[in-house]
Length: 302
Image (cartoon, rainbow, N blue to C red; front, top):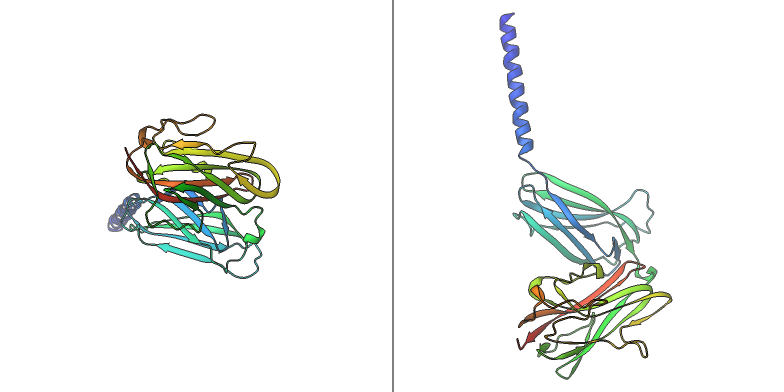
């Protein structure tokens, strides 16, 4: 009896030690986390066009893989079977990462609502999986389909910034005290929308893709304008006869053209001889669709 009791105590002790070790193992395996999730344009993707994806990842130990899947939902009906997957291994071995990606929605995608699944696998064996909703849209069914162009002159050349932009051989150079004026138009829009024309130092790594993304501590506002209450599809201009002229901005100015209150050009934005992003962003605020175009320019004379 005594012998059996001792054996029982030994077995119990072994079980408790194993349980404690398992608890210790679990405590040593933190899982990845994500935030700042951006999926398409307000969780929409357009067939055949660019799709924006962004997350901030903090690994439990170190990142192994980042993966996205677009999978059909059981409660949805689609014209044909379609799913999508991308795996990125370039973040392997990194603790914290900004995953900012662009890819085209395949031409064979089926319109409808899908599960957008983000999976982050950690080198410690743990895994985070979060599911969001995304809507894939045929461009023929868009309520608005913005087409953005910015027109300006540089060194005597007329330059148009849009999806067909080709950089001049001599590049684009702005010199201190140059007066810049930009003509912007956005085709195929209605209801309400707003635009910004911006200059941003390339070193600040900031190219806003929606108007809500604009960081005014980094961006110099050359112009901003908006429309509202448009019932029919039309073209939005930042210069309208007898209404407004596009404002000018002098390279080296102390304040930009933001409205209602111009922002000082100081801090990170202070003018200097370096490379800048120069372009525009437009968001149709009624339909949550955005478009942007940026080019690289050189600023000299400071």
